[in-house]
Length: 99
Image (cartoon, rainbow, N blue to C red):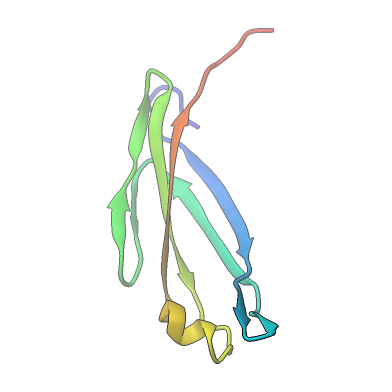
């Protein structure tokens, strides 16, 4: 985080798992790993792009684009149209506290 310019970056690492019920059984897909750097600057993927907003008065918007690869799952890949871009956005408010 650069307090003079308001530019900020944050590592984002998340894991998701989709489950669906079919008749009497549950279909569990492989985990989807989404890893990117959220930034107050521009982010570009193969299919999506966007710009964050630098921190002004402690408030800003960080965003990131992550490429999500195919999982090899017969259901999940076509359902999510993998591979594709995942778009993550975080509205943020920072307060500096002296202790």
